Image 1 (cartoon, rainbow, N blue to C red):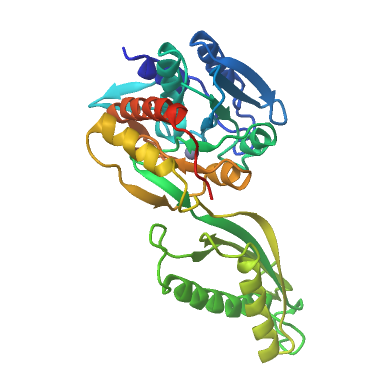
Image 2 (image 1 turned 90 degrees about the vertical axis):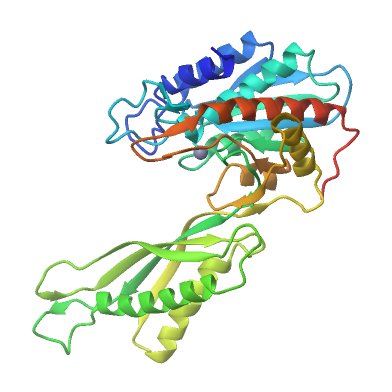
Length: 386
Ligand SMILES: [Zn+2]
């Protein structure tokens, strides 16, 4: 069996469900141990660092004696939960696919990047500089792993091996979560003169938000990432059938594009609330930001997509497609902390759903391209960055 697939099967067989997403889940400790053992076995210098709450990042390094640029491969070791899955931790190979929780998101990419380091190590290591292979925790919740990683590790270029169907993704959207609270006045349902209906008033907000979403999606799309968008996630309010509700709460998600100011999502919601208050001075509502992560796009002149594209053509025999991803990833954490990064990983389907698989041939192709990139990167005189 190919060593990348043996490793992938081993990783899928270990339950590493994110314990913040699913209380009581085991988290990344066991899978981190397996990763550390594999990295040591193939000749990497390994450090295991607690990213918080006993959740370990594993970083392996392959160092050349010649000074040169640093390249980082990065993947997350946690997975989402397994509700509804029959046998989530038994890797099953069928029709060129490997099934199991995390097979595509993203143990396939993790196995490919570690096994690429093995190939580079067997060739005597990078010609210059260093190859850093980082397996981080908690991407599926709040990326405490990537946040901890970038406090001590940086590289001239990074590849996050999230699933991209072997396309090179040069960036991705960001997101913002916002809570809106509309205030009313509680009163007996029979006394309209005394009550102010917070839920009805939330309706005014929703109508404006829907119009704003239409406007966002009607804008000229970003060449690779499409448009920004907004949707409601939760609504709550009311106490009983026969009373006017005194408050109503909405949480919403806004997906953002590179170049949008971080303050934009909250600003646009607050603008809507101000407009509504001007129209009706008795309208009272507040908005606050719950959590957000910025969009990311690699600088247009960075040589990484070209080098990765050349490694891809050399190994796969056709040009790579260059895309933008819609989903948020740790590449933004790396990129904003000074490691310019792209996404490149195997294809498959069913991430976060009850039937998840990765294409076995894609894992091998990803491994081969990453190893080729590491060799070429070590030979490259320098990396132009912007
Ligand atoms: Zn992922």
